[in-house]
Length: 337
Ligand code: FES
Image 1: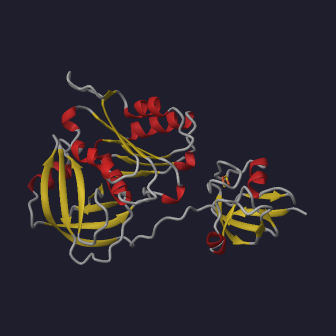
Image 2: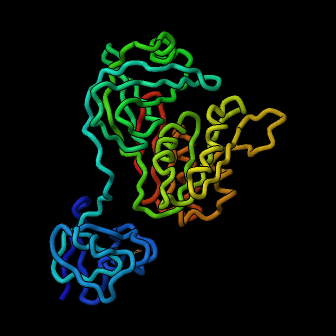
Image 3: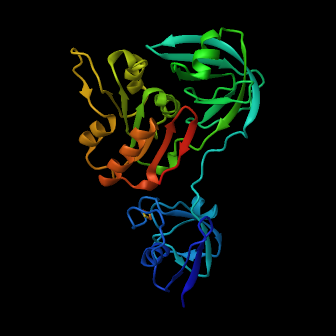
């Protein structure tokens, strides 16, 4: 006898025949469930059982008994023993609820041609936990706010921001240009869903343009000295050599990441540049070729992200493992499609 499976988030519903797995039944009926190997080995199809129970013909490699005790199942191997309600939501590291803080400017430093490194001290934020990759809002006092990704990892004391000066920009030409140590700023944090999903267990491809490097830096710093850190390739697109404001520091990251490759890409290099040239996503595509194994993180201009997403999916990337955060003047989260 078949059983009915309902997906909590989408309200999709499908039936599973007695000898079918949940995943096979979903595919047969046109319901999308994230998957990869279909053999119980990769963990991509992991779902949480909200109601009902399942059995396995062979216990799958990618499911630990602890996972099972916590209610997780692998859809590609699970056979329902009753009607099911499943959740496809992917777990994320916990973080604090957004809260308003009065920050004190600890340092303002020009780095590179048009980027400012702003360090904000956060008194009374010892308990603050944010996920590397998240952003904060700077409240401007006139009802406006500006959003910036945090370039540092949580330490309960300070946050670092990389802020590109925008000619005529309300914040960067106005407030930022006069900021000095000791000044106060109201900030609101943490925000955003762009963060590192360690449970993906895939090689990481990080692609950034401009100050889109900031959240990527935070993520990579959180992986440093971690023996479980997967291989990481970072492609950073800028216009000219002078724009690579963190070039030397990035080169040292390889000492603390297990298998790290850094490729700066310039769109308008000077005559002495002997590195890569062109659009950053096209250079990554030329180097990597097949993206089917990667988890891909992208931050930067909306045009780069849209173009990269299309290109990488054409080259085999699984859209379920593409995470992106597009920088406009207003910070906007672009969910993976
Ligand atoms: Fe790989 Fe299910 S798809 S474990």
